[in-house]
Amino acid sequence: MVHDTQRMQSLAERMAEDEVAGRSLWADARRRFFSNKAAVIGLALLAFVAAFALFGGQFAQWSNEELDYNVMGVVAQEGGPSLANGHYFGVDELGRDLFARTVQGTQVSLLVGLVGALVAVVVGTIYGATAGYVGGRVDAAMMRAVDVLMAIPYMFVLILILVMYGRSMIALFVGLGLISWLEMSRIVRGQTLSLKNREFIEAARATGVSGVTIIRRHIVPNLLGVIAVYATLLVPLMILTESFISFLGLGVQEPLTSLGALISQGASTMAYGTIWQLAFPLLFFCLTLFGFFFVGDGLRDALDPKDR
Amino acid sequence: MLSYSLKRLAIAVPTLLILIVVSFVLMHAAPGGPFTSERELPPEVLANLNAKYGLDQPLWRQIVTYVWGILTEFDFGPSFVYKDRTVNEIIAQGFPVTLTYGILSFLVAVAVGVTLGVVAAIRQNSLLDYLAVGVSIGAQVLPNFVMAPILVLVFTLWLGWLPGGGWQGGQWQYVILPVIALSTSFMASIARITRSSMLETLNLNHIRTARAKGLPERRVILHHALKPAMLPVISYLGPAFVGMITGSVVVDVYFSTGGIGKAFVDSALNRDYAVMMGVTILMGALTILFNLVVDILYGWIDPKIRY
Image (tube, rainbow over all chains, first blue to last red; front, side):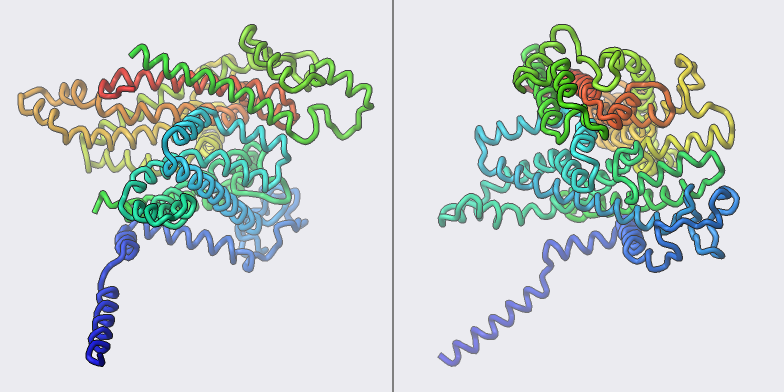
C-alpha cells in the first residue's frame, strides 16, 4: 500500500513534467506569431497607438477644449507644430491644441472599433453557433435571413439609424455592431457544423448535457481561434466605418471627436496651408489600421492549422 | 442554368421587399416625426401635414401604399422638407452623375487591378511584384475619404494640374480625381486577390500540361490560367460594388460633383426621411441586382457549381 502511494506519486510527478514539456496549441501559435516580422511590427504599432491614447493626455500642455488666443486668427502662420508654445502637433482651425485633440480622437476611434467588434462578435457567435448546432430547417431559415441581410447596403441603413435615433455613441456602437455580425455568424456556423459531429460532442450529448451548455462549454471554446482572428480584423473595419461616417459629419458630435472627424476637418482647411491638421490625425489613423491588419494577418497565419 | 438564375431571382425580390419594409418601420419607430423641429407646430397644422403625407393612416396601409407606388409607378413620394420637390426629382438630378463616375471607377478598378495582379503573379518576386504587393497593402489604409483630400492636396494645391471639385457636365478634368479616389482601394484589393489566385492556378496540372505541349506562355496565361483564376475576383465584385456605392457618398460630398450621395447626406442632416429612404432603397435595389448578375456570371464561368 505504501509502495503503491509512492508509485502513484512519482507517476503523477512524471505526468506533470510531461505536461510542462508538451506544447499546447496556444504556445505553438504564440511561437509562430512572434516569428512573423509583420505581426510583431503590427503589435508594436498597436502598443504605441494604445500608449498614445492612454497616456498621451499626460504630456499635453493644453486641454482639448482650451482655445489658444495667441494663435487665433493667425493659425496658418503661427499655429504649426512647435515645442515652444506646447502645441506639439499645432492647433486646429479654432485654436485648440491638436495634440490633445488627436489623443481624444484616437481614444474614441479605438473605443468605437473595440466595442463595435465586441458586439458583432457576441451576436455573430451566438447566432452562428445556434444555427450550426441546431441544424436542419432552423439553420436553413437563419442562414437565408443572413443572405438577405447581406445584400443590403449597410452604410445607408446605419446612417438612417444614426439620424433617426440621435447621433450618440450608444447608437453608433449598436448600429456598427448590428450591421457587422453577419460575416461572423457565417464563419462560426461553418466551424460549428464541422465540430458538432465529433466524438467529444457526441459524448457530451450521450451524458445528457443540454444543447445550450454544449454550445457554451464545448463548441464556443473550440471556436476561440477563429473568433480571435476575425475580431482582430473586424476592429479596423469598424474604425474605417466610423471614420467614414464622421468624415461626412454624421458621426460623433462635438465636443467629442474621432480620427475620422479630425481628418475631415483637416481636409477642409488644408487649402489655407495648415497641412498639419490633416497630417497628424491621418498618421495615427494609418498606424492604427496597419497595426490591426498586420496583427490580424499574423494571428490568422499562426492559428491556421493548414499552413503548418 | 435557367432554373439557377430563377432561383437567385426568387431570393432577390423578397430581399428588396424586406429592405423597403425594414427601412419604413425604422422610420416610423424613430422618436419624433419628420416634422418635429425646434419650433413647436400647432396640433392642427401637424394633423394637416400628417394627413397630406398620409402619415395618419395605419402603418400597414402606409407600407402597402408606399411599396405599391414604387412597384407600379416607380414613385418614391414627395420630399418631407422641400415642399415642391418629389424624391424622384431629387434622385433623377444626381443619379446620372453618380452612375457616370461609378461605372468608370468600377471599370478602372477591375482592369488595372486584374492586370497588376496577373503581371505580379507571372513575375513573382520581381521588383514589379513587390511594387504591386506594396501598393495593395498600402491602399488598405487609404480608403476613399483619405484618398480624396490627399489627391486634392497633391494635384490641385501643389501641382495645380486638375480641378479639386465640381462636375461641369462631366468634362474629363473633373472626372479624373473622383475616379482615382473611388477606385484605388478596390483596385488594390482586386490586384491582391488576382495575384494570389493566379499563383495558385499556375501550379495546377492543366497549366503544366499546356506548357508541356509547347503552347506559347501568352496563350497559357490568357486562355488556360486566367479564367479559373478569375473566380475569387468575381466573388469579390459584389462587395466591391457595395463599397463603391457607399464610397460615392464621400466623393459627392468632397468633390461637389452633384451626385446622389450629396442629396443623401443633406437629407440625413435635414431629417428628410423620404429622400433618405428613396436613396437607400434605390441603392439596395442596385446592389441586389448586381449581386444577381455576379451570381449568374459565377455559375456560368464555373460549371462545377450546381445548385
